[in-house]
Image 1: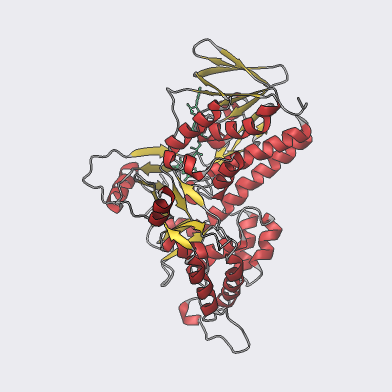
Image 2: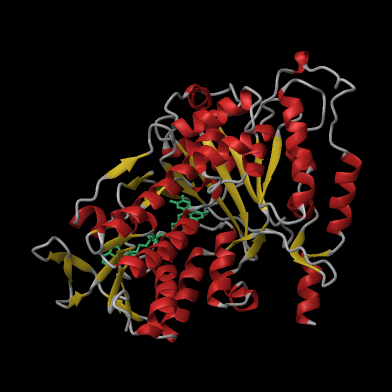
Length: 503
Ligand SMILES: Cc1cc2nc3c(=O)[nH]c(=O)nc-3n(C[C@H](O)[C@H](O)[C@H](O)COP(=O)(O)OP(=O)(O)OC[C@H]3O[C@@H](n4cnc5c(N)ncnc54)[C@H](O)[C@@H]3O)c2cc1C
């Protein structure tokens, strides 16, 4: 066995984070002799929300060589081509926009979009709404699945919606069938060595579980990373106000668009996520601006459930991150490591990236501080970079109707990176160059940043808009539209594909 593969890895927690980490570690290290054990308390259970992903979840399944046919139906999963934001801006013409996962075909239309945004930022009258430029937007609108026909070798980027309980159960079965050890036990105490490392988890049933590396996937409790090791938690509360969510499912008639809807509410926003069997709904709000009862009432009204006896579930969210994800012989992953908020559905994305980066760092240097510190810097930067993009959604909002939205628009607690991006946009500088400089273009693409700014209509006010002078050239919209509409004909709609595959 390589010295850099730990013989005995113990993962505390059997939520999505625990099982995703177990699958990845078993795949990389299992064949080289490592034992991976997942300890979870059935009595405590899992949080059971988190129904949307980024394309990173597709990469995860591809990495494990698990085919969509094998897991999607087991998890009631649907495709996700992006997120439609509705009601975040009061500007006419910008009531709604789609944030797509950009794909290869968009390389043709993205320069046109960036060009027109540049002109619109200077007050010229050109089309600069993101909905006109991306293939995923067209496919979502037409209810198509992201698999092209054979003669069209340009697969778009996409994620999924899924049932969080069923995803956990699927991964548990997958992992245990391949040798991951599953122990149902409640951990009540943690023993440490003289050097501060974790030595043993003491369970309520009297058993003791020893390990070389411990992964804390115990959810918001963060039993190892924060409670046992005293890891510092850095709150994002100053720039992300939402700290609760009220959730409730509804039924659907079998027809759905492959997109998440993120709809602005009085003190936050609500998601609407189509699974094959139901719609997941959740209102994410700030408890400083609305009570739990008011939020539940507003959600029920929005989804037509005022008179229903379906129970709503209120969840508290601890928004922020641990200062160091890897401390002593413990890696924090999932909610125990941090949580931004679900607006861009990035939590599992970070879990996957954390596990992969950790294994790489560990293999390179074992417990040496150099690799650990580099990993911690990289992981912290990922959290902060994703946070900044999400904070942008609130800071740039153009609503004036409630204290919540006005407080968000007036928020001055912005990172230097987000300030730089906003300055670049409003002073007509190159947003892509700024993204490269401050974020190394790592967390959100230039297309995503342009979608955010342009989707809200953050252009000079309508009365200042002027005709485009002849010497400036706007994008050829006919060509862009043609490319997108012809490309879309190479994709089948969801029902056709199901019929085609089962036939
Ligand atoms: C409102 C909301 C919406 C979200 N939406 C999304 C989304 O759209 N997309 C996304 O990617 N993520 C989303 N998330 C985050 C997502 O839910 C989590 O990242 C994901 O479920 C992983 O959770 P976890 O495994 O870290 O924690 P949990 O699911 O809470 O699992 C914790 C595990 O630890 C175990 N445990 C705890 N204490 C002990 C103990 N003493 N002994 C033994 N076992 C113990 C529990 O039994 C459980 O198995 C959302 C979160 C919230 C709050």
